Image 1 (cartoon, helix red, strand yellow):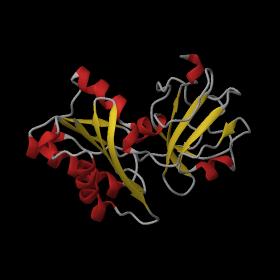
Image 2 (tube, one colour):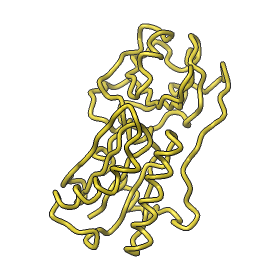
Image 3 (spheres, one colour):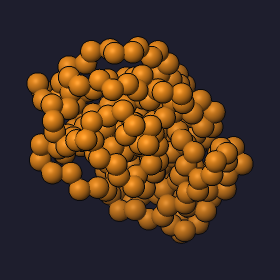
Amino acid sequence: MFLCIETSTLNCSVAVFKGEELLSCVEGSSDAYIHGEKLHVFIQEALNQAKLSSKDLNAVAVTKGPGSYTGLRIGVSAAKGLAFSLGIPMYSLTSLEVLAQSPIEVNEGELILAHVDARRMEIYGAFYSASRGALTDISADVVEEDVYSDIHKGNLVHLIGDAQSKLMDVLPANYKTTPIQFPSAQFMGKAILQKMELGDAEDVAYFEPFYLKDFVAGKPRKSPLDF
């Protein structure tokens, strides 16, 4: 049994898994960050719905960023607290890895641009293949007309994240919106289970959120189609 925490955006989300099976998910979002007042309540509700106590958990997982500084600190602190108090390992994913696991249909040859709004005309973004494999590293990008011109090569690109309207104002017609705006803990199970099987746990004492800060306009990136 393991518990997943996702607090990198306006969505505060907690899920409990038994292997790949989702036992429960409790989440909520608003225009204001509710994580500080809601996260521990959501954790208890998710455990209650799964008919478990915290002592039944074998591991805890958290998204490490990028995203809201406040949200990330709250989520990481809660995960570290559970790991320390229960003596269980902690695992992590980036917020964009979680977004890329969202259940949308992506055909072979199509791409995903998972992203988190960084305010103004900036996003944190990374491209993923139809099989959800990462094609580029996460980068901080200034949204402008040719920002990804060396990457998409005319392929259909599905936008997953909370800056879709901003992106669609400048990106070409082969970029398409989706209903998915926020990462959710309910889509963390498979990737976390793989990390558990590999023993890819974090060093809880030294673990910190992944803050990505530097924005560079027009920064060249290698095309994922060259991989």
